Image (tube, rainbow, N blue to C red; front, side, top):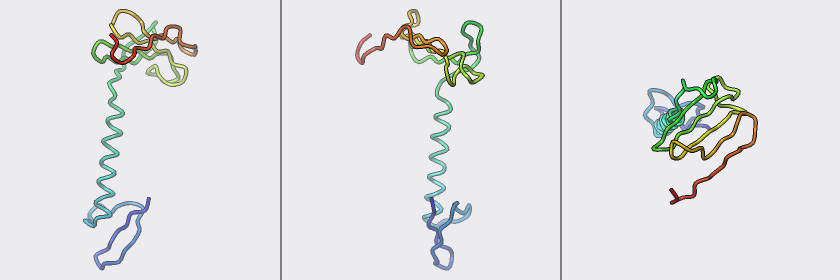
Length: 117
């Protein structure tokens, strides 16, 4: 995306990247957009998944949100996700509401509807 930059002589130029020390509206806006996208990327990275767990002796990623507990294991990535990973989820911490072994179809799939407990 080209950035509309106005140089000190009033001439309009189109740049690939904003100038670091320029205060024109085009460069300022581009730097602001870059900062916003960096924040969004960092928020996606910190999605609550923790490494270091294990399922059946394989490395796994785990996530807990309230009473819901999830684990991913056995995928193409070393942390236990990626293609063909296994996934187990429990909404009460005791009973499995969703189970899929690596490379297979789900065998338990109790989707909770909104408002149900």
